[in-house]
Length: 210
Image (cartoon, rainbow, N blue to C red):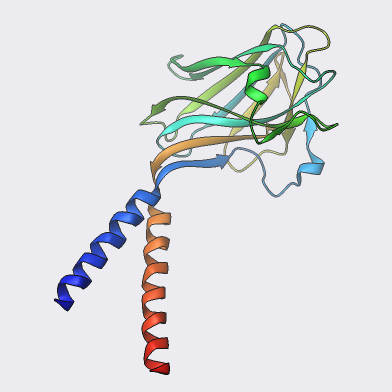
């Protein structure tokens, strides 16, 4: 009976660890050692202005991104189109809009004087995305003069990236985190290691004080 209980416990621990380890994991394309107070921004992204951010996917399962932006002149922003394409093939893997409704989330504080925060977008999972270069394009479509936004930028991270504003290279990286939906082996191992540690610790304490 004892052996059966042990087997059941081990199986449950592995199953829980596997479930916990499969999910969406973010990775920044910018230098995360730079504090948010040191971020710059692109300035007004008026209608017709094109912002492009080229990046290399560092893992399989690319499924979206979060981007930090700020409202400039008003409490609302107009409509901006975004798209993500494979650099080599030109295949469009995702498209959508960033507008006022995009900022209605807990990570965006429109009521503050700064009116800034993160928005999240998603697209179909790219199973074989590791090592591929992608291009994110953002362009204002229905944007009044007082409905503009700006995208935050800072120093580049370790992965290769290129940021351009209307074709001009900015030598910066947008404050973007790429989202990957995958099984995280590191998390799986750490989770099981914590379980083993707790079991050993509890057994030790039990023997010590019984």
